[in-house]
Length: 347
Image (cartoon, rainbow, N blue to C red):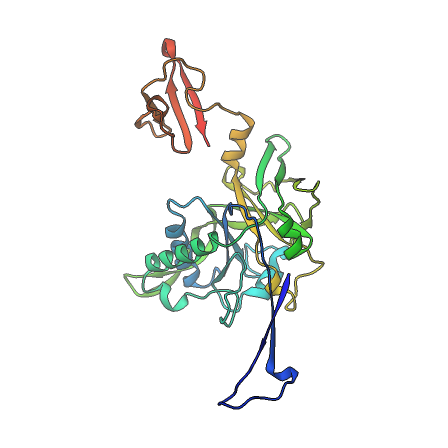
């Protein structure tokens, strides 16, 4: 970490006296290495009584379409039906209005708040707001990253115990710039049926939907809500956490979201600007179950690769392994000799 000092040499053509009031100090970091950022973390502070929250959810869907490098979490207003006590501090620190959202909890210099507010534009075009969200997220995706993060998991359907292991590499720059690093593991659920005020474009009125399907609802934490400190063996780290899923949660709709932040004893107004997310990733329950039943890369052991394969929707595709090119990420069904079919995955 370095300190840059700027001195004012002239004011209206006159040389000022050399005192501390004419000096501006600012700290900056110089780094030699960086890592690819896994995902951008988008955290929305939502309110089921606001029709704009439903509009923001629609904009978030536009942002997520075709974009696998975004992890979204919806934190519901304290005291509401889908709120949890552990997340109330987030709303206290960031949610100056509802709905609002942060991207990597990062502050953009010159703004009045860390969170963004789109309420003046959501009613005009949710698709336009989704495009703006994408632009903000992709801008943050390019910011320097000094720690990687990958998730592995196991789930016991009988006991409903979920175990998640986070692994990654920590560059020396991470400790030099941020000090100790903390890992936060959150659990979200999609398609949670609950009340939501919505806007009817036909009548121009708001109504309350009793069966609204809420996306990305924050359900709980596997770690401390402000993150649990992690230790490295010099460059690599690994941390494992377990929890028993609530009986009321639909396990098939769950996603584990992981965040790396600066490790602190408490998040306050004084250190809020230092609490941006250093890196993030996520793991859906479907992906977790695939890990428990690993599959090989397409045609890895066949002498003559099949020229075709099928996606899970049954569409016939060209097996790019047979043409020497790279197969897009996904799960495929590949015909085998003798009429058998192998389920395989490309990562």
